[in-house]
Image (cartoon, rainbow, N blue to C red; front, top):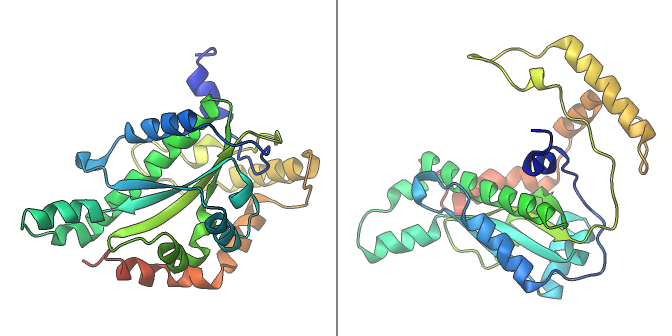
Length: 248
């Protein structure tokens, strides 16, 4: 197990936010998309699509939404799409009811498919020496992203992925103790002592890491993010329903 390259890759993931000014070759992009297509899919319905954003102006507009400059300066930008539109097209062509595609079950399945495929892209990219970061921040204005990408009903932008050649090597960020996220047979309430210890671990990590030092604990981070959110994120549920998801 010590020499398992896949496990080493997965347990040493770092989000990369600084990239070299170097485009990702097209054959590499194709390999990443091939990896995404082989990802597990709920009921083999393959309810996701991927948009490669290559237009500089479009990347600039998306960078303004995310507030992160690397959205436009990375080697390549993917947007992962939950997609039931294609299956609705197939159903309508066959003149059968497509109502189930709008319900909560199938809506969640589409988002699961998109998220799983996105993780495959990240893992595949890292295996090829690339770096990547997930851009949930495209949801700062979900409706604008939908408009910019010309997304039809029953599609929704789940997150972006900026990939490229790393121009940094951030410290490995400590994760929660395994006992706080893995249980046997039934759910267990959080352990106060484990959270206290993890608070100290995160405090030490932020104080000692190579860049962007700060004084912060895990609880401080969670409490802050529970209190603030970009204004238009409060509209996400309404936008989802407007797109035809979670109607039942």
